[in-house]
Image 1 (cartoon, rainbow, N blue to C red):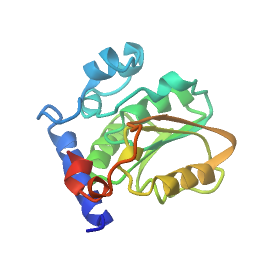
Image 2: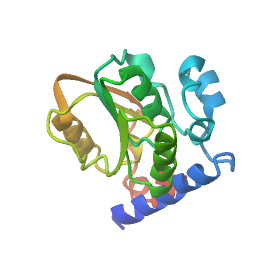
Image 3: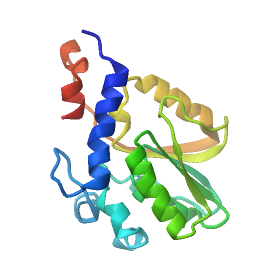
Image 4: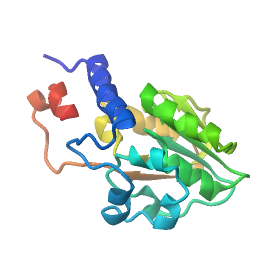
Length: 198
């Protein structure tokens, strides 16, 4: 049976809605700021800028900030931002003259991110609902795209990268931390939603 993309997205949303509301429940992946610092190398001073409730729902797989600097005044897009830990960090790095935009498809994550952004009165960033395959931004509008453990969950990775290319300004950068495989995945595994979300 071919992969039903809407069923896949629905199941992914369920998993990450749980991470938003119950980050310590126990998942097949690590969560939280201690993991981000000790296992992925996030500097503690960056994590300290993020509300504890936001960083608790962190579920990334690497550290996109280790791949290059983020400069004041830049526009940064965080694809699959979740509760917003990387977006909060990026917003701090770009400062009041820049902008950070978090993009996610899971309502519970976006609600958590937006609540804390509004509570703190941070104006240099925003959160938007959307898909990595259909980024709701103008062409050539972003200096840097970051993503952390999300592109592996998208069924059409080529389309994601076309969208990234479209929204990046000339000379723009992409800093991705993700899961990769070194051999072809069997067709049956690619079509099994349980494997995608397990």
